[in-house]
Amino acid sequence: MDTWRDRRLGGSDISTGALGLGCWAIGGPWQDRDGNPLGWGAVDDDESVAAVRRALDLGITFFDTADTYGAGHSERVLGRALRGRRSEAVIATKWGNVFDERTKTLTGSDDSPGHVRRALLASLERLGTDYVDLYQLHLSDTPPERALALRETCEDLVQEGLVRGYAWSTDDPRRAALFADGTNCLAVQHAANVLQDAPELFALCAARGLTSVNRSPLAMGLLAKAAGAGSGAGAGDIRAVPPAWLTWYGPGGVPAPDWARRVAAVREVLTSGGRTLAQGALAWLWARSPRTLPIPGFRSVAQVEENAGALEHGPLEENLMKEIQVLLGA
Image 1 (tube, rainbow, N blue to C red):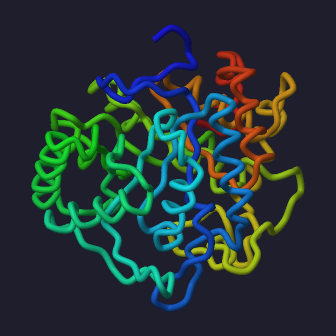
Image 2 (image 1 turned 45 degrees about the vertical axis):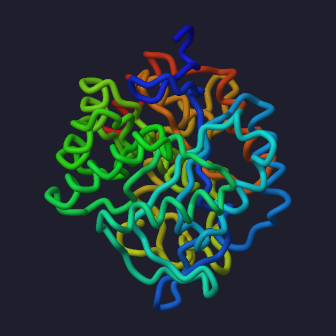
């Protein structure tokens, strides 16, 4: 590709930019079987649609969602936003979770090969499209022997033209490598940000020619908060009642002290050169690997515009990357 801003998904001819958007938040409220929130609180669907369309206008074309976000609602909103503009977008969605769309409740999971096709056809209907560009396994801990069968099912879906490529959303390099052996595996989706590096997964993507799709690039908002900000989590926000894996926040959505200290340590470096904190965090990922494709979340046009503004600054300079390493003791 011509510039650092350009990406192709894996070895395919699917072109996208260096920045995508994560569509978890625009799914609105949903919950687990115990009533704990799994979304980011209430949303305005009209604002979400306007934000997606603004992203397209700014050259952001990669949109990452999942069937379970908002129990189907995220896919429906994204489909509405892309109506008439589908050809401009690269859609990534995920399968593996089972949910009740009526009650907006996560009810379980299903890693059987038979479920893949059912889930995909339902996603296509909600998205209002006849194909998905990147189809991703959403269950990070599926046993390898079961994952092999899922990989082969994904290959079948590629041959049928229902998906253009596939990936696994997992932080386990061994599992990611298993999917990477598939002919049409194009990416790995994994957690990565300036506070939590992922050297093994970055190395895997480099060795296999895969795109590194980075979830939690802003540490679920921690790297987008103003200095000294406290709780930003309201009713229906997963950060207010954080599950065990969500270590960045404590009860009520207050940033966990250890993580808040790390943000404070690197804030000045990340905001140098006129960048906002969020823009600096995205710039760190672009400097970390030329294969990165961060997918920050959004709920408003303003958030999309701020994230897009990071593209004007480009990757973080090498001296600043080294300074951050020292500050974090890496």
